[in-house]
Length: 233
Image (cartoon, rainbow, N blue to C red; front, side, top):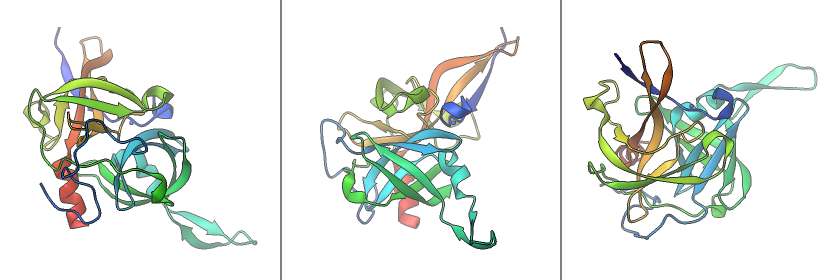
C-alpha cells in the first residue's frame, strides 16, 4: 500500500489542533519531575490546547492554538459604535485548578510557537527550560489535554529530526509519543524534568483509500528554539 505522511496541527476538541533569558527558569534548576502548577489548559471559543508556564509571566504554547485569539475584537459603546480593540485573551486553567484570563503576547508562525501572559503569574510554578535540542533515542514524557481530558502524561522517546521526513518542518523533532487533539502546545520533558520541547502536531498516515490514521508519531519544537525566540523578543 502506498502511503504518504502529513503533519496535522491539533487544536482541541472542537477541531477534532543554551541561552540565558531574563526571568525565565532554565536548566540550571534541576528536578526529577516537572513542578505542579506549571502545566496549563488553554481554552478558546473554538477549542482548546495546552501550554507550560516557564517564569517571568510567560506561558509557552503552539501558535496555532491561540492564533484565532489574536484577531482583535472591537469594543462597543452604549450606542453600538466601535471605540477600541480589545486585547487578545484566552482562558487559562492550571493543573492545580486555578482559572484566570491570559493575554496573547506574540506568536511566531515559522516555528509554531506563541507566548501568553497570565493575569496573575504568582498562581503558577515555573518549569525549567532545557534550552537545548533533544538527543535521538532520548526518553521523554509529553503532557497535555487530549480530547477534553485534563493533564495526562505519556512516556515515549525522541525518534529523529522531522526535516529528514518532512522538509517544511525544519526545526521540529519526531517523537514516539501518543499525541491527541488538545495536546498541542503542551511540553515534553526530559529525564530531569526540564522542558525539552513544545508539542505542535501529530503525523497521519494516508493509505490508498484516502483513510487517515495516527502513525503513532508526534512533532515537538526543541526548547533551544523557544529560548532563542525569547531572547529576541
